[in-house]
Image (tube, rainbow, N blue to C red; front, side):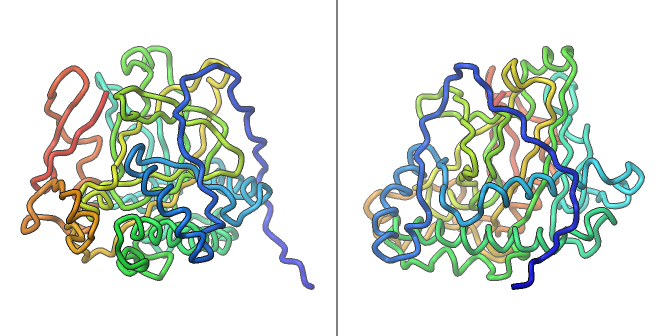
Length: 360
């Protein structure tokens, strides 16, 4: 057998997990390898249904990549930030407010977090663009393979389980997610940089306000620095614990609308890490799944479950946006539009006739 030679990427030893006693969210852990059989999908369907109704979040394990492959992924994920000059980064940035797209670089200090404090988050997103920085060129085959793995080996099984939870045909949601892994889904690498004490005080240690995601399913590859929190059903913020080589899965707005409110787009935020992890740069690797651009975000009313349980719409069907309209509208406005304060916690904006809430 001929071994594949991979290009060198600077190795980043992962920081140690926190030892602090945090208020952890008790999220379900799903063994996705069981979804390879009809019997396994029947077993998992109720577990996933309940997780996505109660929390909107869950862990996935046994997804098909090893811990060594996971470590390699995070080495590659640092390349667009540490191996590309600032000048070249500017060449691969785009006018987010005009295009409604995060393709290429989103620079630091683009969003406003609170009290005039800008964000310290940099990210690079694939694959709407054909060209990439020179340092990324050798790694593109691995990044494409990563996208395909997320799309076919993780997303598709989850979509089948969600359809079964609504008593719909298994392929219902798969059929509205393009079979091309570089189509409606986006790979995004992120880096959160430490902030000053002054900025932490002004934002009450919040790095990214409480929000829900745009798309159908978000796949986050777990990493050791604790900073992600979710709002649990009792209205409390709780930390998401790191599990080696696990995936953190959450429902987004589009799936909530497609499921008539049956599945929950859960509010989550990013905050300053605990004391024993402060000072580290926090890396993220994501796959954001979207329905096909022309899919109108209306409930699957033929679901027997929705016919029994009832439908909760965010907007009337005739006014509902398509996936593309929703994605572009939110991307253009997020972090740069003026928000209307509802109370001491919630701020609101209206996008395409739909109220979008931000939690601080």
